[in-house]
Length: 361
Image (cartoon, rainbow, N blue to C red; front, side):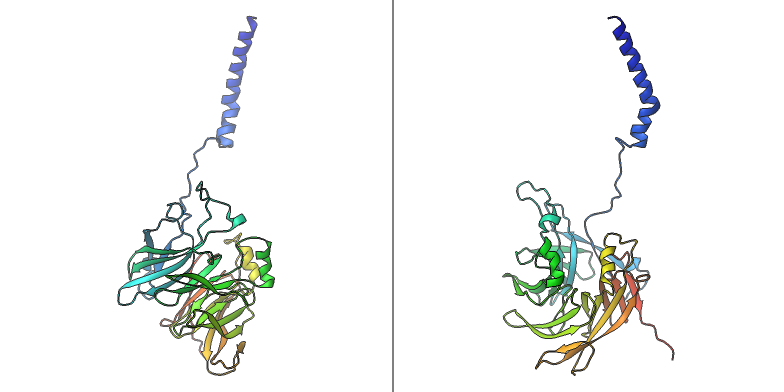
């Protein structure tokens, strides 16, 4: 029996030697067990910035990041996940009213734990903020959370207290959602301080970045069909169709300049844009920008006039790129004073600025 303690001592000594010579390095150096990994500190919380497009100096010197006040976020984390946005001046003041879609995650109401949005969908809202012109802080004013705000894409002000928005699908998740690319789906909603409602829920094929002109017309781009549907909003807050322009291009966000011209980001090859969502820094989907102009005639490319309604709309392609220079544009903003187009995209790594070049004859 006296031999056993000696054997145990030898085994312990042998194990310690093996650990020091081989296992320690393998476990902690090679495998990294117990190693403290410092995060990149890249925020998962979206931020908004304001760019002075007409000032002097570098782009960086003219870019101002905006902080938020009085916004709780999800479970008090102050986080926000932005999508569509619109800004409107507050009458008789130096303030701006900001309207944006917030794709907040779904949360278990009992435990407070985050739920799998791929299985049950998100819990999106539309948020209202106010900020001073030239300021660097926006203060949260109101949250619109309603069952009709299902899959919001973009919201646009109608007046100081009301807005319209698009749901780009009828359903948050599931097989039927995927079939909407073939069967159609999506809707347009309306909200004011009294609540929200759907004002049109048929005839759309993935309605995307809605726009509202200074003349009160509501423009709805359809990503799947490539149609630009144009409506008036009547006194009952219902949409009445004025015209539909067939473009042959899947459409995304709209921008309406002070001339009343509508600029639309378009996708020459949508399948490449969809693939780039998984590899945004490796794949460069092509880009196009279309310009729509209102005319008082029945002539014009792609204009499908409704009986008894004038004017009509014509469109032209003002920009196209195979993606090598301008990859994945999903929004195009025209500055009519400087005659520049600002381009950005959800999978684009940068914002591009294009100027019109005069060609010598």
